[in-house]
Length: 368
Ligand SMILES: *Cc1c(COP(=O)(O)O)cnc(C)c1O
Image (cartoon, rainbow, N blue to C red; front, side, top):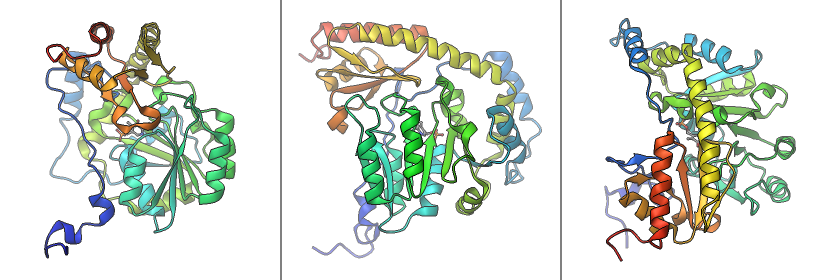
């Protein structure tokens, strides 16, 4: 049947109609352990100082289009190599989109190992590229042979490697990554969203390879509300990608607030240290539960597998705890759930709820 004139069916591209929008559930009063957020708000006196720092902003004016002061502070604070260029985005998601828009052409491939961050596929598709996922090995490490073969065959314009990977929490082998960077004909983007929770980073090595870019975000380090990501790489590449950036993409409140936060970096670092400590405790507790398989994580979340994951997820929710159910994705993620590391108290509530659900045979209370 022909679609009706003036209808979305007639005009929206088939690739877009086939997509499912990125869904974020409403947490209500639940203990929120689903989105890799830092669980600690700022102490009251710091909040007061932050609000004071915003007083001088003139909201009638456009922000600094290049966010120059913030860029300089980010470079110094995060150790961006002097000869690398830096590009800021409205979250690292926007930088992924700018990358895809800059390189996309029908027939070109954007590649990533799978399972991984779902936005690579979504953004590649929206940009009109072919997306190729290459399965990870059984233990969620990179399948070196499969990756090299896929690179050879598909000649990807961009290879995204989340390092540590989301949703598995694993840290791919640095030697294999280096081989992939050497083998890739196009860009390799190392997405270090979880840099605060691992000692591994390729940021210091930007410039050593002509095709290596490193992507970061302040979201997971405790500033998810600001929406600020940054991309470091060779100047010739970033000068081109910058042309796809919308003017004033980093708003005045974000510029000022991020500057303020970077001046109090020690607090964020201390929180990241505590999250790492909590992660290791949570991992031991999870791994000790009968019927639960947990994967060691270098991020601020833990992936685990449990039989009847859908029912376990629903049971946790009934007990007031929201985590992420990855089981509907199927394949390697069948029966997998992902819990974000929260405060000690939140993690204890999660573990209590999980023990309760497992004792009830995985079924939510009152439903059988
Ligand atoms: C959370 C996440 C991001 C998104 O970061 P934003 O800066 O909040 O857009 C990017 N990459 C990975 C791997 C993530 O897990």
